[in-house]
Amino acid sequence: MIKSFRIDIPQTALDDLAAKLAGTRLPTPLPGDDWATGVPVSYLAELVDYWRTTYDWRAAEAELNGFAQYTTEIEGQQIHFLHVTSAEPDALPLLLTHGWPGSVVEFLDVIGPLTDPVAHGGSAADAFHVVIPSLPGFGFSGPVSEGGWTADRIGRVWAELMTRLGYDRYGVQGGDIGGAVSPEVARAARAQVVGVHTNGGPGPMPPYPLAADELASLTALEQDRVARIGKFMQEEFGYIAIQATRPQTIAYGLVDSPVGQLAWIMDKFHAWTGPGSVISKDRLLTNAMLYWLTGTAGSAAYVGYAQAQAWGAGKENSGVPTAVLAFAHDVPVRKYVEQENTVTRWNDVDHGGHFAALEEPELLVNDVREFFSDLR
Image 1 (cartoon, helix red, strand yellow):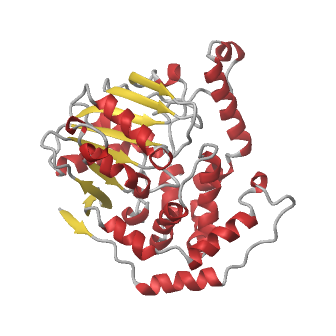
Image 2: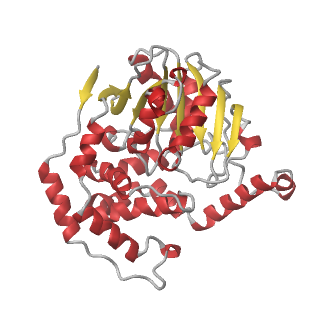
Image 3: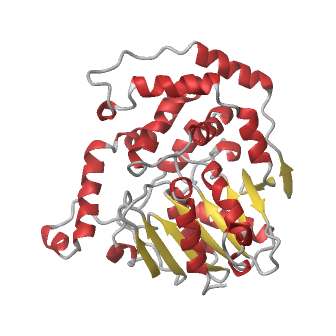
């Protein structure tokens, strides 16, 4: 059964948040107070002040409620999703999947161009019906009551969701966790999925560390990406180690402290966005609010990173046409991606970061339109 859903946060929850923000105790800045040791106190203090004095959740809530939302239960788990249909009769259904530390908020700026292309400089032939679920354990799809929410299971659940909506032919798109889940939808429903579009790549990543002769066989761009993977493993892997091994422990701080939750998220938004990227404070805070108001920091960490995977196990290639939109921040390497995916489009972009729909919505929409134009 699919039920209509509307966000309606009690005022008491907002009052509690306001009180917590007013009583915030910030740490003493470490030497330099820069991003090398985490989120600078000076930066976060300013953002928290904006959150407390200027940010308007009710406006954000109204914007979200401007899109049709629903819930359904699949495999015992509540799944929340946006479902926005196009007025164009030949629109292709498109399933969009976010990642961590994102949410359905990532896609708000692309819904209009995808569903109503004529109003946004496109052709009626480019129209999509969009389905945007919250990952299990995230936001209004949380919390979770059992484990096992691996990418392949989510892919099967997403295929069931599309079946329930009456779609027997559709495309999929996603980045981050969504980039891992999207090809799994195709593996679960290869007769229904016409194409897989990912920003950042669907995986697998290059083996680490890479042998010298293997590294020498790569292009200069690919060698740079491998080097940045190594840097990530040395300097940024800590959050994965914590969330993958102790998601319950980190959850205590994140669900009790809105500033702690915001800092945990903003550390990655800063690290993973392109130079000069401008995502509005309101968008960033609305994304953080979905974690805070639902208390799902722990279950999001658990689903995102705490699932055991068979080491070195390869994935079956679904044979479904797959596109990779690789912004400058991301690190896919084609020869490894092609081990498990039928890549028919690869677009390297010399700018942009990890959050494509937030940072480069027009570029993402155009790439999606072009990829699916021959697959409708």
